[in-house]
Length: 307
Image (cartoon, rainbow, N blue to C red; front, side, top):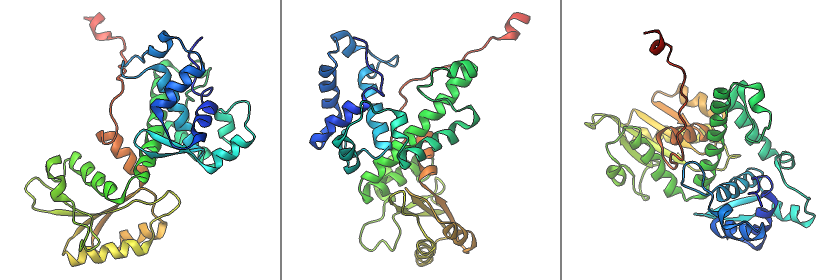
């Protein structure tokens, strides 16, 4: 039997989660048995050699179910079905695929974000005729942007599922990785204690010598809970108490238009980073993600033949 594609695996993955919290590795094993995969099928690796093809497709199925709100992450390598997912299984369809998931607004938002990432050259991962409408290198680049969009969504989902302390640590770690505040060994020093922190979660040196500092506020909010102008004014007051001139306000959600206007009008420089920007920075600087595989596009060297 051939290895099933990730859309074929969506309904079986959802059914596996119906028992409660499950470990993704266990789901991979059980579904391999359910689909009667041979030893060769089970051990078939992606070109990167890091993961089996079947496990990769199970992960993608779980990820897409999460984008539609049918499952949710609970802790490392574990997930569970949501109330919406249970409702689906009360009268299960013959198949769950991308078309089925598109009925849910969260999934529509996710797909719209993918389209924005890929621009006019958007290519669906499962589109059979994509190569016929785009040049091969365009297909690769557009698919890469789609993968980044999916990764960004997964990163934010994991961050929101964590604790506020983890989010604060992550933000400071990201800034250190970007070149602020020294090395990762300075992480503990950069974090401000929970008690008496004065509304500031971290303090980062802007330059290697520590001649100037950036004060950080990190708010781990759900996507539908935007940061308003009052939170920006409170942060401004905290900066005033520290006699600070620069602040960075980071959230996993978004900022209201009034919050952005307030930040622009205040006398201190306050930079706002929303969830979308945060995920892009994490991907760019390799925080919370890693390189799975590198594809190199080569082209003819005309100068070589003209010499």
